[in-house]
Image (cartoon, rainbow, N blue to C red; front, side):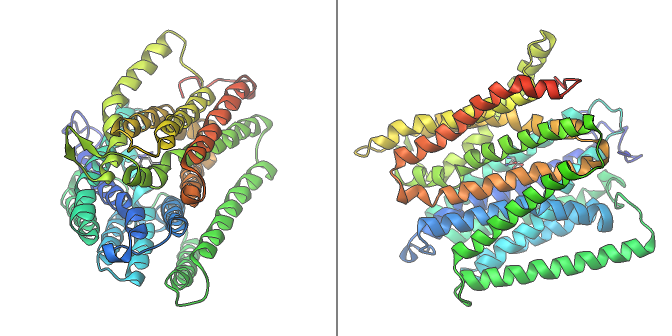
Length: 497
Ligand code: GLN
């Protein structure tokens, strides 16, 4: 990556380039809007019409939740492409922020078509913003600058600071005052992020202004046309989807969601099929690609458990948990702040543990860390079987707190190492694509997490949580058993990742 000449010497923000502060707060506000709205989304959809909600049944709400959250992450792939080839990351982030804010305000209008239009705008906006803002972070540093990893850790704190305060504010406004104040607050947050991004733009120098690949005119024209047609296709598909969801055309919400599920499967199989069939890789590279395939699968399953924070765990918090501390009641959506709170506290401790283990030569390999991630995610659900089985009593808030603690430890052993491992294992010429694949795993995971919600009422809660827990723990153990074989596929063990 080429550093921006005027930022790479800068140490104004905790020893980092001043531009990191701009990006930190942009992403903080973007995540504030994302998690603030997400904390309310399923609660709003499943609340009775009399209570200002949409009156959906849980399965339908879950299908929309899964579709929306999976598309948000899927959109980062075309969003990266558009920035790389056409408009550059800097403008992509700006346009993305504007789309997102418009989306939240659209949702605040309390009309069903505007609700879906809002979700659609947020998907497009996040696709343009989320991956590209990280790309600009990378561009603040010269290639040998050893502050880069620390810079990303600070940036990850921005993500979690936004995710921490969002449910406290939007959740409170939405659940206690009126849903639309919650959505509106998410929009206000994103506007602050955009204003701050524009005002702080000078600190970024020329980082990310230009598209990564300057192309000859003919290809640039082709790309603009491809984007235009792709955009039209997506907009039309969205219209059909919205038409179906709002009952304007005779297709059901579940059919739209099923279609998206088939598309996700097709993209995943198409991509890995191409990867393994293509003759363009050496046998050595091919072995690493198999490892990537296994890690992809593990990450998808991990996120499908973890992302139930906004779906089944959110419903459990509302219906079955005793939401009060020392007699003071709090809105159920506040539980969604816990993951970020734990993350902010434990990320530095975990980093210290890895350094200690690595100097002692005992740091687990990447597949082993992924395996532990799955086990922790599974354990988080396993403990909930106990309060879920006790129907006569609301669960102490300590149960969900413990679940989120276990899930955060899982996230810490899997998520930060994940992308890094993808880029280390992938041949350099498809490195950018691998960033997209990492988000594809999140997308698949979110989709599954929404569909699991369909069982929230159809199955007894202890069996549902027990099944989810078993999937995580059993797959984690299988991955542990596979680890020695996977290490053999990797001639030079990337033990640091
Ligand atoms: N919490 C992180 C973020 O919002 C990671 C989310 C994910 O990849 N599922 O960026």
